[in-house]
Amino acid sequence: MSRAALVVIDVQESFRQRPIWAYGSNPDIVRQVDRLVAAARERGDLVVWVLHSEPGTGGVFDPALGHVRLIDGLAPVDGEPTLVKTAHNAFTTTNLQQMLTLAGIRDVTVCGIRTEQCVETTTRVGADLGYRMTFVTDATMTFPIPHRDLPEDATIAEILADPRTLSNEEIVRRTEYALAGRFATVRTVDEVTGAALTGARS
Image (cartoon, rainbow, N blue to C red; front, side, top):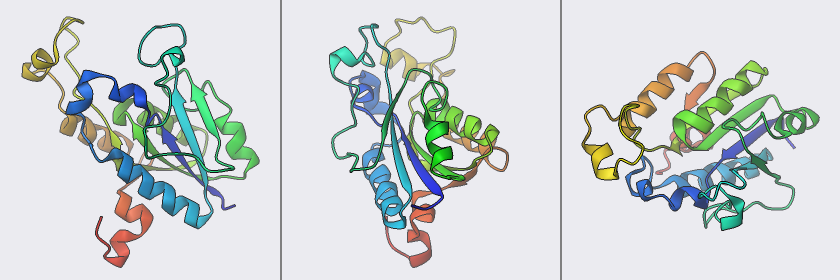
């Protein structure tokens, strides 16, 4: 086992149950994550899967509904732990830090859903804990963010039509700007997997 880990955050069926899924930033998220996982396994890196759960809420993150599972096409192999969190970042409500420490991990790569929320907060906390973080921007996915004054029952059409809505592109740009050089190294899937160096096409 190397001293590096890949943490895959919340690439789960819960999100696909939401109508906003069709307007996500990265419809290729499963393939991009799968490429990272394959490269990590080939290097002997630890792969950690993280799922988000909100028990008793009756929503798409309530495990009783059966959606708190990886999206089809992704699956752990023997020796790859699956953690379940109830906070945005992957450290606070799990034993992720203990697991990484026991494995001697110093370098942590992160990907998953949502770019500016669970993936970003995990990156920030990991950096605060002393890990060298890599944020793989095109292996994350997010969704338009409505303005805080928009009614909670606003339709998707109303959210998208509101000029105050934060677009996917702007969310990704702001997240990269906030993280790069301060909390993480921002990379692409091609760069992490070596495809950019070999000229392989994604």
